[in-house]
Length: 154
Length: 119
Image (cartoon, rainbow over all chains, first blue to last red; front, side):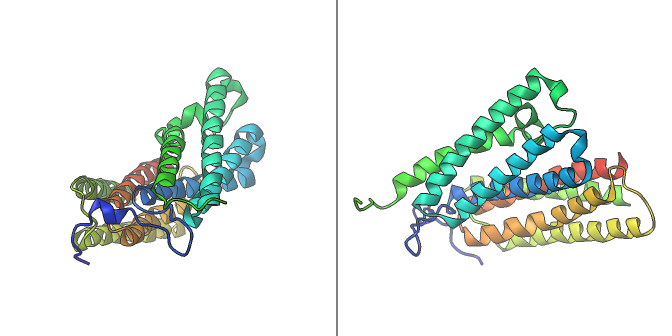
């Protein structure tokens, strides 16, 4: 496994099997963090909904929404291709809006949230990753469009 | 016993994060030595998983509930191997960065595990 140091040129892999790869270069790190957030949010919300949904229905529903968004973005990133790239871009925007809205809501009206959500206080409990992730995600997805070979006009 | 293990895993995970982060900084992919480091940390998390389950079997109760405790133990055990496999598919600095972030995730999980077990 002692391969030579890979240069930046080889790191930006081009598409395989017709689909442009989104999981290459910095995309690997991105999909890893999204994967971790998906596992964390999904297991958290499954546990919350099964065990103590009634204590804070709003907070636990919002956690479930976050879990679905993370899982979907991870799936689109792994799948790759232009349509998946666009879907992921839309979801990242939705995720950012969600973090900002829920974050502001939890700061403005804490009494509505007896229990915290993934997106409480802009994701402070998750080291602010929820608010930073969609921004880096959108930057990467916009950039990876530029790296693709020029598309044939439809 | 479990607390000592949790601290040990947390410290080694941070060391692994620094090491692989350094490799990413120097624009290098993960190499054999990094994988040996990952194996060491993974073995520690496996020991932690076994010790945790044995403690549960003895009738000890985690402060924040058994389900959460076991979920975190399994998550801690799988974090580094998953990041390691990803770094095998991405032979560049970004593979190293992925392992570094996986190790940071593991360190965070250990802090949470400490709270979940002890309260």
